[in-house]
Length: 136
Image (cartoon, rainbow, N blue to C red; front, side, top):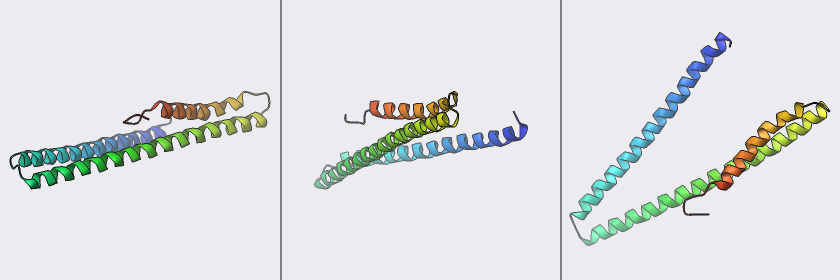
């Protein structure tokens, strides 16, 4: 392998993995902080049974319902994008295979088109088998 290429690839890979781990760590800490604050609020509310507690609990339930709906919509958009990407890869692979077959008739060069086509098939099939939360 070319040393110059290796010198460029190694720091790039380190940067990607460092960025991914820091991003995950930050989001996990934010979720943990949110859960801790919610627990403290519920503990505080359990010590003071009044009408205002019911109002706060109703608000928390509404917030939970909105968050769940937002996550469901986000999941649906991601599934649709994955399905569209799969079909695009499938059509791209078929078009590339057809182009290469006409470019070099009788040769096996058209098989290069199988790679993106099979990736598209995998994306479509995996999206089809994915079950969203709460069933289909």
